[in-house]
Image 1: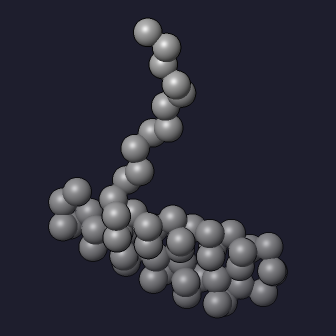
Image 2: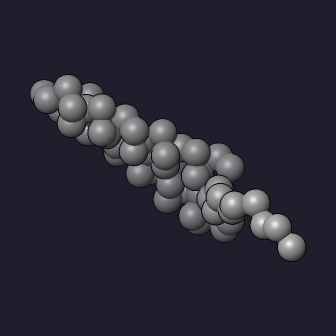
Length: 57
């Protein structure tokens, strides 16, 4: 993953954290925290490979 992409995902995670802190609705705050975790994961390890089913050949 390009360094620019990692920076973008880290910035989005920070924005989601701010939105979660500012949210008055607990469900909205929870959604922002979930998005924050997803962006942090992308920033730190990149995109996860797609899950594949067992292939019998």
